Image (tube, rainbow, N blue to C red):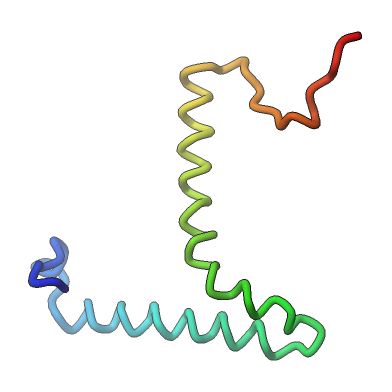
Length: 87
């Protein structure tokens, strides 16, 4: 893609890389298909396109939590509505 070769292409080969790309697209189509099969869940169809972003943010949140565990182990990252207000 864009004239560059993927680093793992030398190890796996072109045919396996193509198979993995097809598997990725097939799984995305399957996700879309499962979202529209149930009539009472069709309102979720507009959010199906955000699923790759959602699954990318999961590991990022894990890395953030691990970083906070190492750097500030006794700090609890709360949202503003959960903070107790002293009077």
